[in-house]
Length: 259
Image 1 (tube, helix red, strand yellow):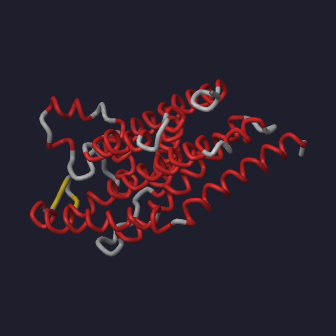
Image 2: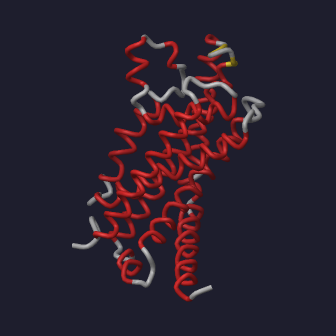
């Protein structure tokens, strides 16, 4: 193994280790709240409202909402981990040490992204465990379930990194999750099937990329979806390619970092 490759490897695993330790050190703030929120969603929507709706697309309503609730935890936490961590790196100026080190920007980006994926999947796993208290769902297509979860986590980690590059205050990194991600997630088909909507609103709903992720994940668990599975994969991969390219270009230029 060449010395350059060894440097890249050491740098990558160092960043990943730092990112995981960072959110695990304050797990009460980073991991536990999404599980508590999931319990509330399942009690209120699955238990109280679900007892009246009973079924959605031929499956018990509780089973229908569980994939969406899990995916919501993955999306929000993958995004939040990278956006807050990268912004802190900018404000505390230790990102500059990485930039001047003999390490490629792609390695730096990958380290932050894997950290976001780790937190997203950790939250998703915990919410899944909580869900077993309300339902006994077993994924119909485990490979689809896991791959959609990982790819979605990568996509929103890239989005969080991009947000952090342009953020100048801590308020800037909360705007997107509060005013963009949360509304899109709620309108992404967590609690309802878009087949219930009029034709016009079905078309509008299909402009929401989160709809494809939730339905792809739902297909993996339930075996049914409002969206063809190939479309879910296509949308996620296109966004990953686009966001990843933009992040690398901006990082190479030092956008939001070099003053």
